[in-house]
Length: 529
Image (tube, rainbow, N blue to C red; front, side):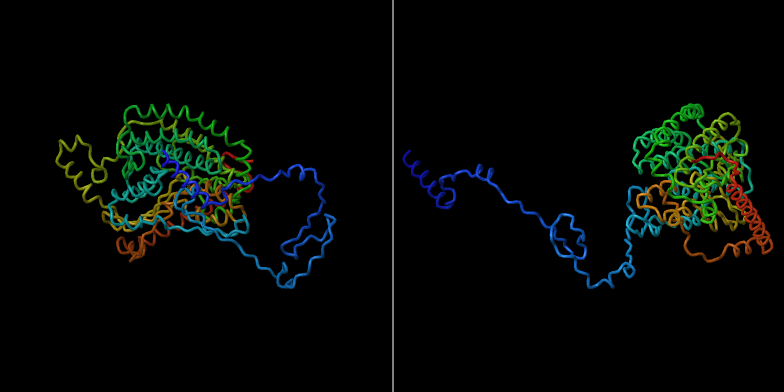
């Protein structure tokens, strides 16, 4: 016990030796009361600016201080001689509002956009060149990947182009099925466009509501084709297979209740003060400028031009259904939003008419060199089995020629230009994606707006960036040389003359539409404020 006491005393002494400040001293008397009741002399604070050139001339505090000295570099730093330096910023390619790999180089003057330079190519895969090495049937799935939001309309455009070269007429039931799923695809696309645009601006609830409806439409895709996204359902000669039993009833049930979802979305957005302030007067585009920039679809109709290929050049069953073309009056982002909301209702009209008028019969042409024979025929007939084998191994030969097929896709005019040299593979396939022209005119639309308004403009353009990164690579022969080699000089010249004549007539019709729009005489459903 004594040993432990000695060790403890030795340790305490060592601690005190190491830390002399730890030794307790007498506590000084408190001075709180003295400081609290002592009288202090008030001393005014003098404001001394960092740079005397920017000192305040007026003596607002009653203090005596010297006048600011004149700068020795007044001439060099005068407003007239001062250079304005703009700020350059990268918008993307991983910006959340871009919905893809969009890269914009924006030149800003404060928050104002002075110039916008869009850069494409980050998803370049040479799709047009890859198609040249595939058969016409193998090339079809590439069109699903061009726009992963509106898949079947891309397939529809390519199938129409090949059918023109083959000079075949598909059955009426196939036309109605194509029209039905074309409008389902339009609703699918506009749900993504409008509601993701609302989410970018700050409204999250409509986005969640819309994805519930998109899930139902994706289920229709899966039931008819077996795939939710890349369906490969619409093919040259018709469609892959008939609609399963019960699917038409489910589509009708969905179409009857979807109108209420549109009304709920409009209740949250259309009259919302924040939504209107963010969109009205932003991205204004007059009709003539929209035509000069090659805008189509809602980007053109929002400016007051009632141009819709489903009306002007009907394809499939669009000449047998009735619908209106909504157009805007101001050409801003708010009008384009209203056009898309009205297109929801017009698509429902077309869907109901297709369900009521759907005829019975085959869903593809009965030419086994173009479309595969049914399974029952292959089990009974050796010739049908040979046709099936050759179709999926070698493909079918398309007569030499060239054609351009255009449809009214949800984003605008989707066009496919196909050149055939008489073989089983296309000599050339050029794809006219609607969003490519819209992105090219972004500088014109966004110039003069704030940086935050660029998000609203991108949302109304409805861009998907896979279709902006196309390309065929170098070509060894021109289209005209291929035609002259295959079908003769006179035939190629006559076909080119007819094509130019059709293009001239289309231009005259567009100019007349613009004149009517400027005179407030439009044939669509006028929207906007």
